[in-house]
Image 1 (cartoon, rainbow, N blue to C red):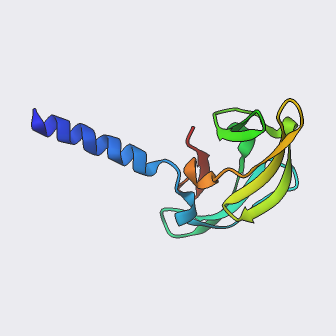
Image 2: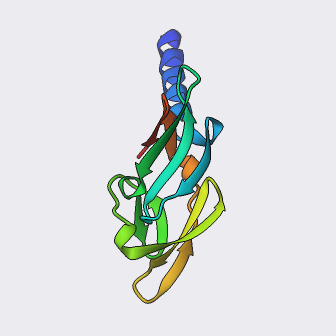
Length: 122
């Protein structure tokens, strides 16, 4: 019985460790001109760098001016890109119902590199 519990805990830990964390193996990241496309050079399992783009509309939603991780959130129509704090933390100005707020989500929390491809973990 203890072995089963240990095995289940290990599986949960591995699943958690694989979520997010793309910054460990991706560099030269930036927002594209479309406001929601985000590209990086990511290392695949063979050690080769691949330029990859992910549409962040598939990863985030605007909730009262703040961007949060959510599958197929389609935040783009309500937000405008403001640049980047650093390559892993882009910023947007987003509508909040009565004005706008700046939101700079940490993409490393919910994007991962899966064999050279940027993937939303939401």
